[in-house]
Image (tube, rainbow, N blue to C red):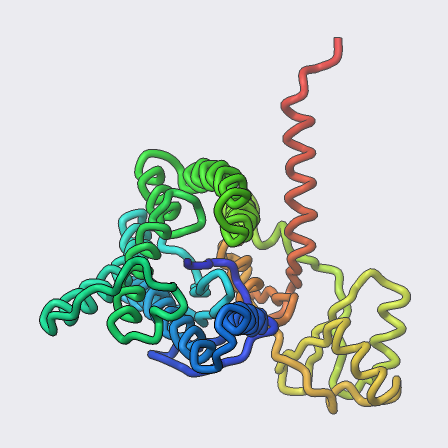
Length: 381
């Protein structure tokens, strides 16, 4: 699965395992729960340490295939100039966190199908190897856990699951790969935001079906259905927000009344301003014009660790990322979502003239919606 939402380089509660082709490979903490559940299940069935190790080895091999699946997405996206920040392994699969999804529907379609094609390729390679070595399939009546002790059964099982992964991922349930192919196909005939909305609704309908099937077949289907429902809604909402920003300029969205601190100011000054104004995040400037950002979180952390008389210039503050006054708001939103700090500065001729926070953008859109509703309201008679 791919994810276009702007996030830090590595998802929270994740541990980086490696870096492949400039992409961080990480595993989420909840993945340990999956391994523990598998080990416990195998142990209860076999009371064999060897069987537990075989089961865990199979799961880890399978998730190596998941990483290759996500690399298929990531490396295809790279061909279109789109960087992938990280790939994170979750109990339900992998997520490639891309900077954005290609705007060209054909490119999006190629990125989406690249992952399942990797699974098909893995299955074909295993099938060819088994055929060339005349390896017979295992007895279908054999216990599933004991089968993994046989190299032939191990490979046949890996072949089958890769094919199932390819088929399952191509279900038209947005935001899965098949849902993205559906969205791309719809986007050739309608606006991108409408295609996203329709694909998300179809995906959520399929999530309902999967949830009820989970009652009869597997609780895992219920877990996957909940993920599909929530992810489809979140991505649809993000796309509708991006579309709404077409009508908003950077100048409209920015805050123009704000206080700027100097590196020689103490934390006490920032605390006083916070108590007497609505401002929560402060640009910090030095004598050379370099801009840092003192966020409310950093302010409270510094107060606990150093007290209110600490000089702001002595704090390890992040750089205030800036955008140009005429920059499209969609790009500004991407910039806010992709960074760890909550504020973007707005500059005109290298001078800081405003600040943009995600809350300001949402407030501006709510005002615009209320104005539109008033304008469309029929006059009173």
